[in-house]
Image (cartoon, rainbow, N blue to C red; front, side, top):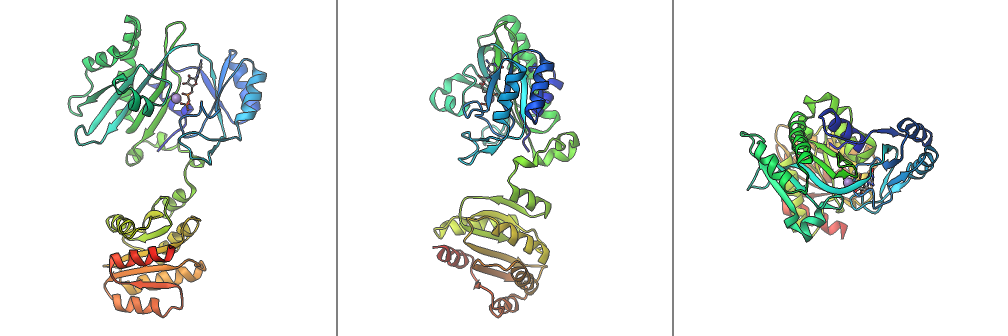
Length: 387
Ligand code: GDP
Ligand code: MN
């Protein structure tokens, strides 16, 4: 789960990491009041779940409350396009009004879970080349990134904090603050089951202070049940609407870019089905696991989710009827297809208990079902239908 910068900064503040004073605002008027309260020069920052806002015009200075209101008026409601949002951009609903800082240097600091075989643990990354996209630094000047893996049993050691600090041009006093920051970041990361904490830039201000000017904190969804206070920070406006609908229907759905919609029971079979579609020369439009049960209600919900993606040109249903008999699946499919007036061609592959009866029901239903027996055969038929 992702959260907004203003929420991430509250967390950093709670963990003793220095962040600028700020208020969030949903209207130009609120932005004006925020700037009045802060009574200093401010920066107005679009709050969307994406980086690269600065380049896209979502981070702007304001010298007075009047200007804060005017700038917020421009940013709120805009469709902000960044390298992470895709060409359609994301609509800005809120801004963070923050005390402006005079920046002397910009560093990069992050903590993430490195899943590669070599490491499989939490890793700190730090770079003196902050402020810009870290992907670009990694590609052009990888020697400017220093990383440090934290052993899960040993924990984060003071010498590691010193190693990270040594990668940056810091004074003795700044070094001390920096080691406090990394120690606290590690504590935050573990406490809240984070998957990423990124501060870019971590700035040195004109008067020599270290300050987190930007903050990104992501959480492991599987740890959220332990943190109701984090769960409460979810902003559904920022999530793909179809994925939210799927979550509410207990269907595992992940949208992809292809045009063959998939409805499968079981995650392993769903992955295999996607592979088969690729092998047959097609592109899956999604991963969708209706779960072991695949009740008529769930099938209907899954159909609705699939058909609301305009890219989907054909639906491939691949269901193994174990405890759930194939004739029951067929009855569910027929009922759901009738209820939602399904217009798309469907390829159905059933295997398992009562499979013959199930196939017969589909063939005699008068609906646009193409019945397949083999897995690859089903994929080929679906790909042929979209071509
Ligand atoms: P991002 O573009 O989404 O990563 O948003 P950031 O919060 O990182 O802002 C983009 C850039 O704006 C930063 O890299 C800074 O260079 C600049 N910036 C943000 N806040 C301030 C500020 O208070 N003072 C100054 N001088 N620059 C700032
Ligand atoms: Mn940034």
